[in-house]
Length: 101
Image (cartoon, rainbow, N blue to C red; front, side, top):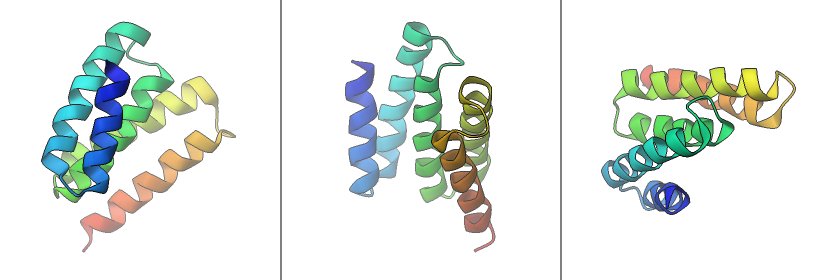
């Protein structure tokens, strides 16, 4: 079920319905924390998408919090050479640029 909420959240982001995206992604995150543990790469993936959705809603504090958490988890679990870690760095930089607009 956590995967369904995650995919639904991604779909809502693509359709620019960011409020529903956040709601679905938060459900997915809570389920994944129980299923995989709070520091899992599965949770990092949700945190990453949450950061993008919050950014679109201009809730930059929440966006940065989620993006930093995704980065932290991916650095620990996957290392600096991971493509997912690089993706988190990129999304975090996009979040900072969006704040300046």
